[in-house]
Length: 262
Image: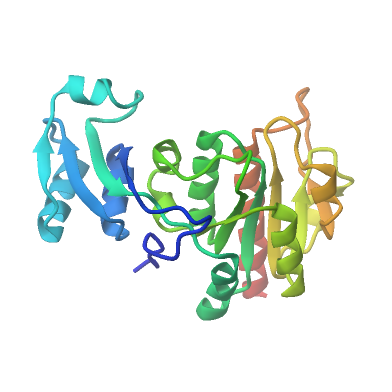
């Protein structure tokens, strides 16, 4: 069973109020992951996951309400799939809680720090890649950053329920704290002189991903031990932030898997 972080300590002094989430995977994973689901709303459908959602809701004693298309179309963006739920807001964890996770699992630490990622769809996509690649936690800054919410949940396909997220006032402070624990900080930058696969990614790592428009801030870059990039052969010299993050995380996974085999 995957660890559940939905009920962990909440950061930035915010109470856990209710919110809506929508989509097949986000609603199903919210129930499986232990988030406080108050009610589920479904349109008529025979999708396999609709049946699974009904079954899970019955086991957990969660009310299920029928709703028509106007209910969903008036409340949610396209892609709601006729499924929604009222849930408790996703909780954040403390940075110190993140640091103990790889110790508890007896794994080499792997964290991601997001330097002012503002698009919730990018944030959600990164959480999906983080879950798939075994990231122990993600750190975001409390201002000028996308935060956890319905659009992030949808974009993550429910992975938001399994990747712990810490919020800090300043991302540089989190980087310094990780370095105190012997974690190497690698900044991702398109025009870096070092190629990603020339770097040793089998050591304890924190990967820093810069904002969609500006990349890493200079002051954040200065705190990195290594700045590495991906080779580009096309005319466009950069990738979408979430795409780049996914490539980087799976290169780390590849190197670590290869090392285990040798």
